[in-house]
Length: 327
Ligand code: P6P
Image (tube, rainbow, N blue to C red; front, side):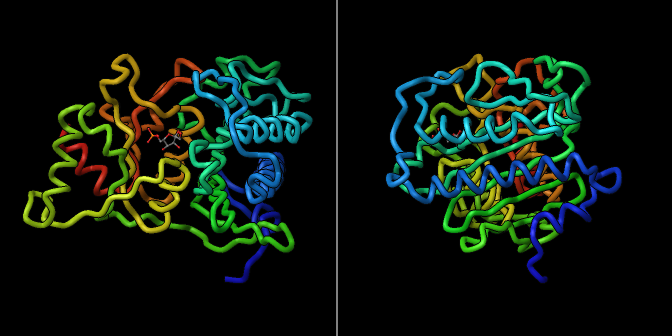
């Protein structure tokens, strides 16, 4: 496949309901442009003053890394004037951010996912989700749309390569940031996730906190080919959702961050609106499955709060189905 650039792709891109609207093309191009500047900061590490903690906390109660705040500011500043947006929401901000114009879309993002990996040079990323605006000045409730309402979603992995994985609702497409030209060049199209896998991703140190069905599933995987699954499994856990999901998009696998009893009142650690939903849209568009633990299809979850958390089980369709069988 000849490596055409992102703008050429967008000009001919399809959505679930036909050619991509010009406003959506423009928004994706703007998001990608900001992510290219985040990539430069990430690549500079300590040289760009982007490491370490800011010493502040976000709405999640998590200590913010310098790069969390810098990335968030870059997205806000880079997109505030976009004619394609009415508002933005971020993991790093308590409330929504109305933009300068009342454009047709809402943008939600985790500006820098995997922060704990920033200072140790392990892949991190930006996750984004695009919803239709509701018209007029944006309100929080306008953002509370189920994942099935997304018109686009994707992520950027800041790793050995800087890679953008994007869906507009008609397949999954991959672009690599050319270090020389800073252009996003397409490297894959219509990516498909293998339906079966021998690889699971979960933080095993939480085992004692899991619900019994999750424990039973992992025990059966660990039993290997002599066990009920009849095959040996491998395990990966980068502790960076973007990196773990990208591995699954690339070679199959299943990712799990289930409910656990450390915070029994919360369904899980990860956030629905800017982690669970965008990643699930990409995974489903690549032929995978994604469920909100035992709460059914992720993209059907009706949000009630902007920063609500969710259990996440996603990846190879047949493996997710196998996990459902343990409920
Ligand atoms: P744990 C990163 O902080 C994150 O939000 C996801 O990117 C990642 O999958 C998860 O949390 C890692 O959580 O508990 O293993 O550190």
